[in-house]
Length: 300
Image (cartoon, rainbow, N blue to C red):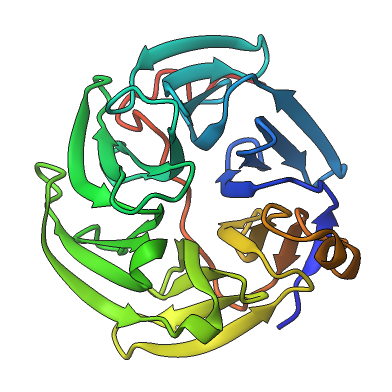
């Protein structure tokens, strides 16, 4: 399959796409550009918000607010009023650590990874941020904490640390939101590019972005086989998310970071947002504090 460009955003490090099914809009971050973007496919318009700090990931809280993980902590951001309110720090305070990729689990907790800006091994971690705004360390000694996904029944959490070059799985306890029993699901050959962000479809197959691999691949975690490949005209593919009214579109983020001037000339669409019809559907985005729906039905 070939993905088509839908937003030529030229993000330095486009990441963390999230589909807001209530608004029918796509959100994503440009980590190194210190921006978040909101794309409306109905009119093709993109609304961008500039920050002074790096947003590593975001998840929707309701129709007006996002939870954003910045390099120095977590904050609630109202994209209508542009009001930003910090709620908690993110592990040890150090200028060399930033947030990287996060997602909500079936219980509405926000899982967020951290990494060293200089890619120092084992300097990052994976945290869980619960609806009471309490932060807890879940997996220490991470290098490039990245993609997260939960199975349809909610009992398995899939996780990528790009430095590991494999996809791991944990048992997920729906009563306590605790993880246990880590195992390696499958390894990824270095020639395929490095595993980055991912999404999961309604059949519990994983769609993994391959940094340096010019593609997103659909993997079956049970057979450990590649089922499909989405080709892109750019090397640094970072993440993907299902969207659209029927959740049958796959939106894909890419990056310009790390490319030479010659590579940018050869791959000018790097940093753009791409889309493909993958032939399967995804699952709705889980909002932060999803057990609190008081604001979910406000008119926009």
